[in-house]
Image (cartoon, rainbow, N blue to C red; front, side, top):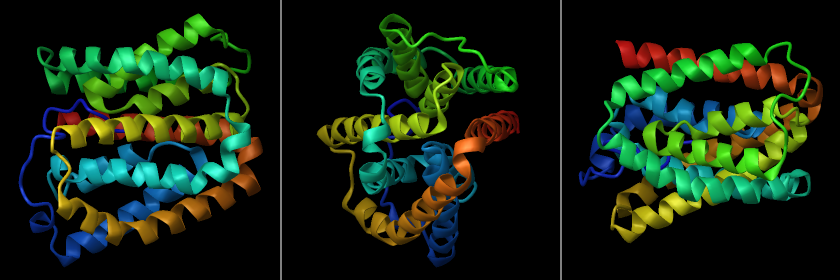
Length: 262
């Protein structure tokens, strides 16, 4: 999930539509469909995939607000089917930490070298994901204090590099939550976190009318992808969720490291 941090996330005042010719819009629809499949299955990864792939064609600063809108739309679409499985005690402490950690991450971004910071965070995610394979016991207790601390780290990661969703997923998998509970909690968490991001962005006048036009073009592939991904989770997710989720984090972390280095 991409949030407030990024050096250019909300800064651009250019017209969004001008950056998207017809070919880029169609490419974007394909990317959104793919990312929606992943989001529907795992409950996370949508923003990371969209930003990583679309950044080859357009400045990420132009698309990030649209991605946040799609994240909220995806969460609303999925909410009826996941609400009863979400761990709300965990979510309350995580959100409390998020509110504290995000400004810290944004502040740290003002003096830390952005690319080096992203490289370190992606490398850390890579190590944690590798460590998670074959780990069956609970290594992070699901108590209020550890969850609150991870919430702060979640916020810092959000502010620094927009990879908070991967941090949250690693934590929940390490806490040995069952797949349905991890997925549901991620959906609810992203709804509130992304809505918070949009409210902050709009208060600074950084949401443009053109972004809603682009959102309209992407909603259908988004909902198709999320629906198919959700069907895939119901069919195969219960037994394979942890392996698939960790594999996704590994791929995103490796891709992020390569992207930063080239």
